[in-house]
Length: 405
Image (cartoon, rainbow, N blue to C red; front, side, top):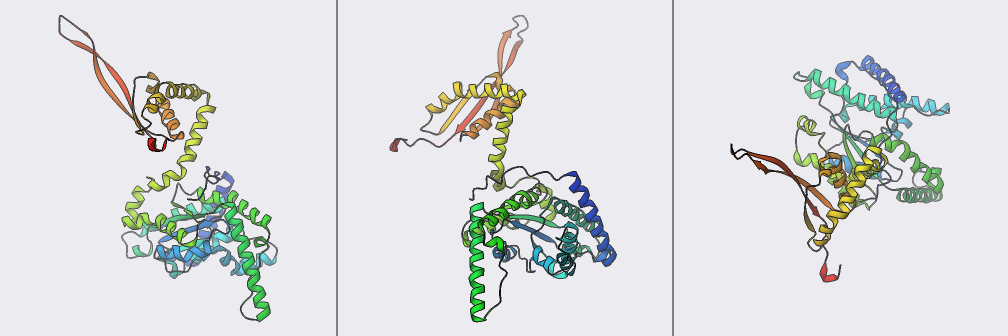
């Protein structure tokens, strides 16, 4: 698995200004579609795969495989190509301007109405900005609205409930730079051959594929903008973080594994939508370490939790670790504790987090027992107190005594 720790950080929240800009842009684009097409013609694909990845991540190489894995037969929509083929965007380029969010969203939504995309589409390069992220959410809401309006009517099949997937091909900076430079060398060699033989077509030689510093800058720009935009959608749609650093067969195995979950279950979109907020098991581990570190840091920084943190660590060191050491060969220790510190839910959570950070797998079960305190000799009534015992099970790799470990 790729070391993606540098990316595992909370996404930068979309600003209020970006939200407002997105609302204005989306409303303008949607109203334009309604005016030109009419509401009954706003028939969009059933399944969307919104594909992102750093330069050199292999989006172009793997897009056909991703589409095939989801039985998508339509050609992918590559945002950069879509912009290059647009007369409106060409006019902007000729004027020395870049295509803004309004132009990108407008061109994309109009393209998505083409019948060839009805069953599904892979979109390469969207969203890339906070504004585009918000437009995507608004787009999903509109599609849900159209689906509900037409449910139970003869047009129901033309307005299916949409399935949005965010797919991010991950490579680290070194892999990205190496692949960009390799691509630059291959294109330069190809063009040299074309010029010498007159056979073939010249390909664009991008300066960013020839200069290591520019390659690194492109990667950093992606990490600071586009990656955050994609990551911020993981709480809204199906999010696939795909390790793309290996060779092609390995990457494609990763793709199959990531997209295999729903296809194996073969549940309906309605059922999947019902359970979608319950995380997939493989996704939990992806962010678990990051979340654990954040919690531990917060325990130390927050004056309210710092005292509990200190006391829990002392309890583990003095009372629990000696028992764990005694079971080092087995790799499995059971600890009973009546320490009232653990009555505090925060302290209990801290204890589990500390064990996890040190490589242990700990679980806690609370047992309550009635213990007689006194007996009324006249009535025979027995007064009991409730005794609470925390039964802590700790598992860890056992010591191999045969090797002296």
